[in-house]
Length: 148
Image (cartoon, rainbow, N blue to C red):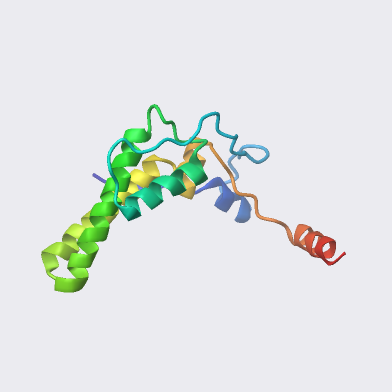
């Protein structure tokens, strides 16, 4: 099933000067602080999965809901644990079927991370955040301030 080309993130449209001349959202969007504390996984995770779990809660906790997104996040962390183990097998044995399984697992991980909003395109689609690049003038002002 092909979906066509993914939408270009708003940040890239702004940097390119908005070649399509379609209206873009005004201003920059910001992540609001979360109103809840990160939670512990309700199933055991290996080291790579637990690291991802903690990183997601640290970086994206304002767009991850502990009520509706926790199961998808937990499955994604379990997939990462599985990938870690499968990668060791591929590195050791190098069987073609293991390599294919690893690439399939990679695609599933990327898809799950996208569903959670962890790519520029998906964040733009969700309207959660927009990265604002500093202008040359802002960079010069900041350098001047740090030298003082």
